[in-house]
Image 1 (tube, chains in turn yellow, orange):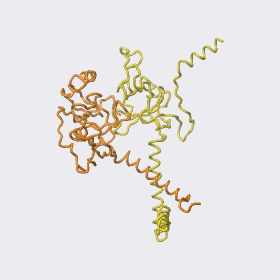
Image 2: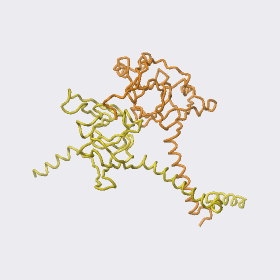
Image 3: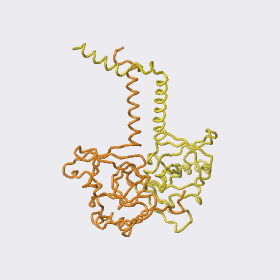
Image 4: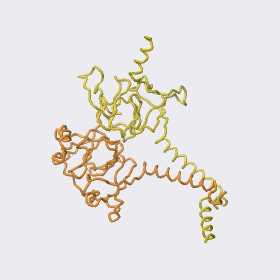
Length: 201
Length: 197
């Protein structure tokens, strides 16, 4: 009984660690082509998964995020761990699928100003009646830094969190020159008050 | 050292399982996904016995550019606008540019606080460019565009191809014979000037 068992175990071990295929000996060039194709397949597969779920690095253009991001020539490093709004905070730079053109592959970058339940100013400060609205559940409110030249939630309303694809964590010039981390520029009000107390003492 | 569990065998096992997982994730995101229909919102086309026996239908979705050539009557899946962790399967009733005349019968099945949302449309809605109006077939309890309005096409995850379970109905598309009672005035999708790229 034990010899049958060891026979099957040995067969499965050999299956799991196969010898190089015969094709390598008979057709070395074909074998080489197959190995290159296999490596390219792995590269594309894992590369695509890395870009979708890990990080991506891409160029930007547009005036809506001046002065944080230049109108052209800036490259941004996007972390895809913040997909669908997971772990996002107010003040983060987010990438999103465009609500009108997203199915054509158009993405945008704006700053997150309202999470579900927050109250936000519907229009630009000083414009119209100054109405505040509450962001519905499952949605967010995004606004560009360059208010006069940005088309954002003030025009298309709150967008579902399902359209958020990631968060911008760093920007640089071409080939990684002048690399800088994009930190959340908003501070808690409590921090400011604490500093003032230290000065008076 | 055991002759079976050599480092080489473990390495091969790890390599195979990582590769298989990667291929599965890639195929799931970009090609096909199989989801189960839980809930009564799409009866009788999908999961007709869910209330009685609890059996659910399983459908296969096509994930590659699902909104290309989308037609009224197609079944689509998308992330719920109210709860980003939930996948919702509903039928496309109106394309962009269409005017949807909201179904009064559906309003009567809603609780009062949701009826206010329905009333805010004023009885009809023009679907904006790049959006779709989706509804569940079962008028008596479906959370759909009647609650949250038209959804952007970019939110759509996949388009249904056919049933895979129950086995007796494998490959069928039982939803194609369904004619929605919601009236739709067809229109042409035009991108507003201020949103052109």
